[in-house]
Length: 433
Ligand code: SF4
Image (tube, rainbow, N blue to C red; front, top):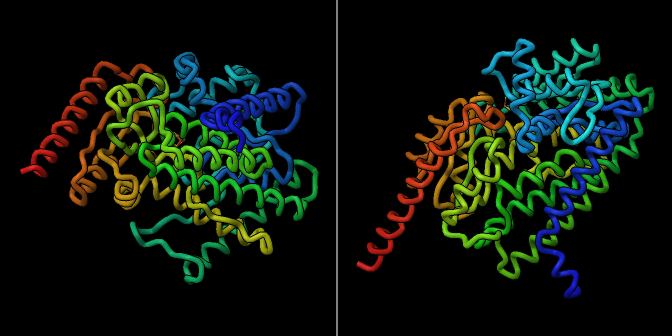
């Protein structure tokens, strides 16, 4: 690798991720102005693999909504949806999307096209009610993929088990139905060779995402799971099954391998390694992160990087010789994993804490999202029984700045770090004595 290329390597993933994000929204804007078709999908089970085979641009309303918060205009969208009649206590992502639709697709990143169809899974019950809104607004087809989840914590079944094979068949039949719906909507025949090509790109991405997460166990951590991780997630969702997405992730692995080999971490002097549980506080995203990094805290991993990538963290790779059955298996394993990262996250956290040498776990339940937040208090208690690891529980929202109190959060976070510092001092004193 040339010296000049090495200088460019560190931070390349963030720069290229931002560029791809702009390209994605430009494509959506052009689709909207040209009257083209687009599919509305969700992060937990987008089934991009099928949609990209039909060359359908994909709209992730969850990502559009969080972008309004990051760009500090979410309150305008929430107010509009509430004035229209939506309750203040439902998912903020839904309300920001409703306002986007009421504005005819107007969004800070460009024009969002209306749906030609929507595809959803049962990973969040809000998805189902949300898609019904588009059905009413646009009279578009809605396809719900029912993915069997884990029946009991630690009780997952695997290929070869009779229960798993029955579940796989159940998903496969539904995927064939989805292909029929796509053919009817687009007027195009399903091209199995193109599908294999798309799956190949998705394989590269899954393998790479798995490797990137694994590499972040390095000391210091190579990237911040909260901030940098959100950029990587955006690409993982929007470009899954595409040549650009596969190439981006291969190059990201290259960057992370280089950083690991040379001991290059994030921009801060890492003092404490943290895990994050929940959804970030997007209305004050940068400041929220600084409340931790100011103390030398780095987020080394999160349950968000698992469930918001639809379970791509698993590194599942499709068998191109039997593509539809293999997609069914991959969806089953990955979407189930995404659901487990929300509903059975204790097993995940115990392993993560060990593997990543975590000093603390930050729980961030949010008003808007009951799917992710319900049960976090119990989860925290249960983790405390299993592991002697400090935890912090702070509540706010991922969209609604009315329930975000920076001063209150800062007090709690400062006290948490003071506790971590004194715990470290006591451990040091103990080891000397
Ligand atoms: S309730 Fe939570 S998981 Fe469901 S759509 Fe809203 S933010 Fe996403």
